Length: 102
Length: 154
Image (cartoon, rainbow over the protein chains, first blue to last red):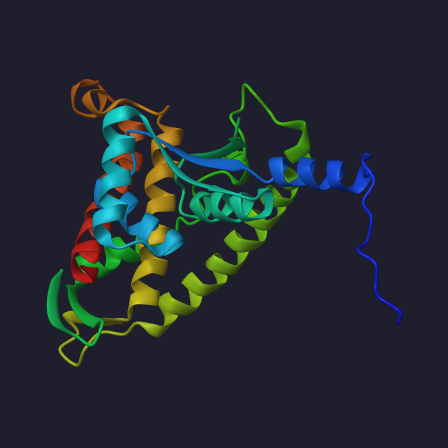
């Protein structure tokens, strides 16, 4: 009777797995909103709700962080998603940037 | 500027002639903020990986401003006084209110930039040149309209 043998896995390095690991590490970007003296506090809260779909309490929490600490880390996302968020925040004229997560 | 009806996420505002003229004058200034004002990364630490995206962002911002400008013209043309000729009733849904708040903010930020990004205390204490008064007026009044609309959305 023919029995399927267990596949044997030999130790070694698959170059694809190295690439995948690099991609998954590269996917981390931080979206940061910075304080400025011109945007109204209620406006910043409103924009956070619109862009991220947050409830008012969460949006206010981040707005207060911006106001009191000078900046707030809004989210961590892939490069494309982070770009999308920063782009949206810029359309509303908030001072937002993205940077690679360490 | 008075809130005259609110419900189902919509609201109606009544503006007298001066208020409507002021609002019209403000939104007609759009766009006030330069297209290249924003950058994806901190300007002193540019990320080379994001250079293309940054260029695309500026191009896209320009298209967005042109589209908004056309919408403003159409919106202004759609507003007419009531029969008494003394009141302008404007109907808002959340999307239209959000749109107008964004426009007003562009004007507010653009005015602030053109005044040299003054700190809040400088706005009241500095001696402004007469030619800056219209810009200061536009910055303050756009903020006032923004606040009213934001309160109506809450």
